[in-house]
Length: 246
Ligand code: PEP
Image 1: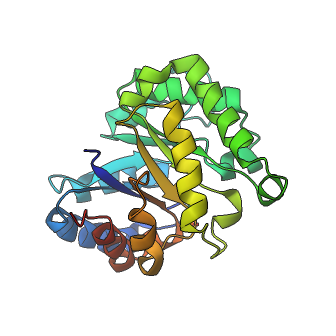
Image 2: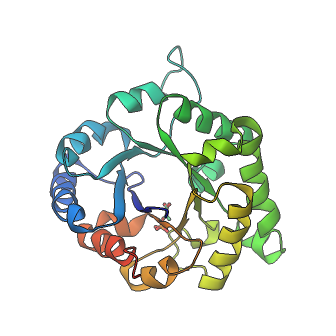
């Protein structure tokens, strides 16, 4: 049985003052949500604050990006061993905002994935199509290509640990959620390429109101939550919706 995972992606939001009460609320309530692993992926400067606030709660810490390089002359970068040093369990790689605004290629995302794994982090590999690609009937081809780049480099066995997040680009931060049928179709496609135990999350405007319908799908193992993860009660409600009903 795949353990459900609900991971918050705070993106570039927060301040020490705002983060404190949010982390405290999550750390207090999450342990009671049986059968669901919660994680928060915070901006780099807040890793230490989050690690301290979440200590002993069972809520995992994650980063939103990781360098593909080992320590060295890479100004401005943060490498996987540093994230491990701060107690991170997860690192998001290939988020569409990084592919779109920072030009990250499939090849670079695959290298980041490998670097994360090499240092004991669990990569959360984001894949997803743009609206134009969906409308052109290219969804399967696009997510297949994004996943294939990682499979070629790291192999299928890497997905014994690694997590995939299917995030249609057109659904991120837009309030538009993919229909359950669309989500299940892509998740089933992805599942064929990886392992039966690989966790595949859905991300894209998930909120407490639509989470249960998405998490009821057979190949959805939880969610990667952006905007809604900034409100502790909403994030916790989404995590409760991920609890298995059977
Ligand atoms: C995300 O940033 O990964 C995401 C899914 O954002 P949102 O939930 O705001 O659409």
